[in-house]
Image (cartoon, rainbow, N blue to C red):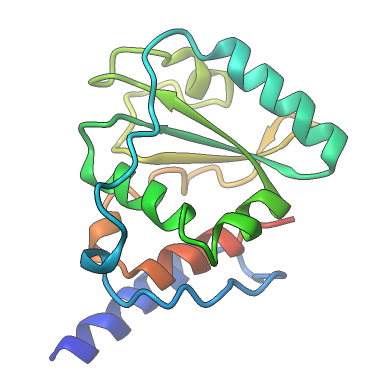
Length: 170
């Protein structure tokens, strides 16, 4: 039964990927979220994020990486699970190679909403983490319609999260 759940979670994550994943994900070696290092990261910080996003976009342009804007809050388990997977020793170099990451605290869906609005998300976020994958040169949202694909990250596996991220790597 547990294997069936793992297979289902992996298939669900694959359905959220772009048509072709050009970069293979590293093998994370952590089969379940219970095996992530504890405590889970607290990656979100209160305050205006507009300057942080602009600086990350500038760095992404210079380094030829994609911009990954992680919208969430420290109160959100799914957000912290995503952060925990991105901090794994197998994932940290992969993420650093392919993405310029900036975290944006959206509070209880009442802060920094100008960031998703800039990328055409005018309605309330359907969940967090909402991950915006942006081409920094054109400032175009690449994963439109799939930005909340990880809002129920706990239903996936750590490897499925890694695979999803790899699907958007440049």
